[in-house]
Image (cartoon, rainbow, N blue to C red; front, side, top):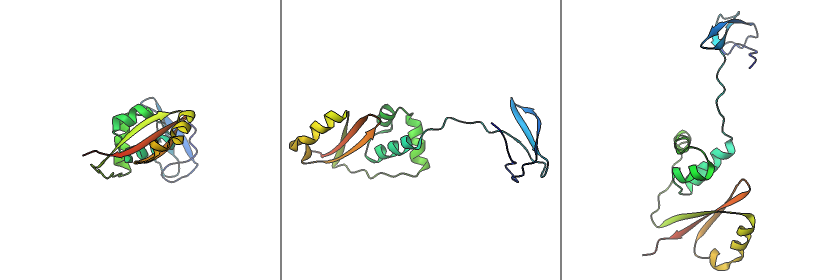
Length: 139
């Protein structure tokens, strides 16, 4: 990674100043600030963050989201906490979900009995689709 300016004063006048913990250290000639290159962490695409938060709002548990998206349930929990997401817990409804192909989705949507009596959302997951359906609990 090439350093072009000081992170403190944004001056381009920087020089190498040794190695600390196997990372190159730099010094700014203008403000005498010492700094090292930040580690580049594993970045997860915003698409997966958005999908995980949508699924959480739809009522899926952290572990279910982990199995579907392939991201740790702890990471999903951290995203929910970071973005301050709150979901309404309504005991009258419960979501059921299925991951299906495009052809299965078309067949499901042709069936009128499947479409009545419940709310439904369809979301894309790569080359497949997730069908989430809410049905009232029977008394």
